[in-house]
Image: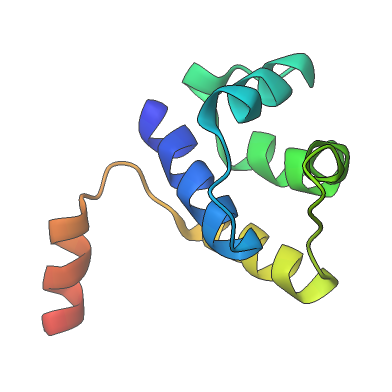
Length: 93
């Protein structure tokens, strides 16, 4: 589900305020034992709680505890089966 990786990349970039490079993030996920093509909520929450700090440090970045909680919350809420159009339609109701 590449949509999950794409969503995580976007959320992480917003959380850090920096355009995170996609390929190094992909490699960091793979090196941590997660398949970027088959990510799920458990994989991403585990990555956020562990290897993410080292990945961000190599780029001179860090997340506050509050930003990390928000990132984990947004990752858990993401449903790749719903398109952005579905989300906006549900908000309009």
